[in-house]
Length: 390
Image 1 (cartoon, rainbow, N blue to C red):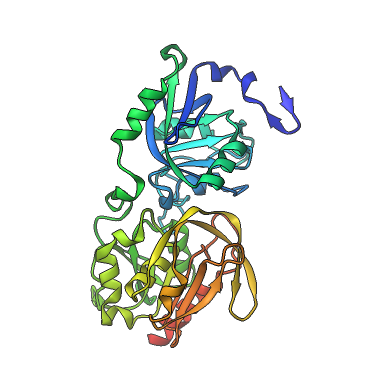
Image 2 (image 1 turned 180 degrees about the vertical axis):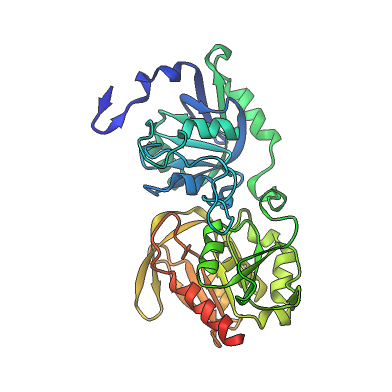
């Protein structure tokens, strides 16, 4: 059955095989059709307003520990690339090598019809062991999250013969699971040992990897910089295998930035502070903390591809964003950092820099995968500063 362009879920024969329930910590329940893996997972329930780029969103390590709601009503029309697909740099074709979310919530799905598709969204989630629910009122769920804030939930996908899980059973699953901020995600998203990417003749930039997206690394490599990819708690060396480290990038990742004390302490070291530095998303927050600033948790975060930021000189642009924490504006006053950009919707800090322009930080994603790339000039600025230092 079709209503406009949306394929309704009740006409799909495969829906008879699985049932799905989302149960929130406040007792709110949503029932629908399950897809993907028949498992139960607990996570923080969040939403994204992005209209495209679901494979990139689902593989973004910043979503680790979260159950992701898509406000766009129909997913799956262009499928998913083949398993193990990589680019010319040896990086995953998507943002990481696996689905990072703990569950997927969507109004409806459709079968893919695209030349690059190797499998459907449903097949992909099943292969990755990730549960999904379609056919729930994602508009009502999003309004609930906007009104009351993000909240922990349990997604339960089961075969139809099992019968529905009771509220008490699902509530008990939530009770036994740790809170989002109490979990440690670095063992799951950060590399275990340093690696080098790129050409030996290109200037070397260290990346403190807290779960960085592949497209951020790709943006550096595209600008003829080579990358020293370091675990999040690794010291930034002065030299590596005979090559001088000439710059630093701190990228995105999951969790509460205040919990990453080793990274904050490393970024506060005088020698590390001398490097031309770019912070993105979580890296933006960590750099603020390293300079004496503070962060706080947003009510429901900024997740989507149409987020406006306004610079101090009056210019504005659109960015892709995915974050649940923000820098406290007042905390920058004594930090020696200059407020560079803000969000006109809620006044939160979107960017800062130091007076020497050696440090530059943006809350949004200038690499824009998925999303616009209007802010890609910050990578150019880092590359210019690194090459001047060379």
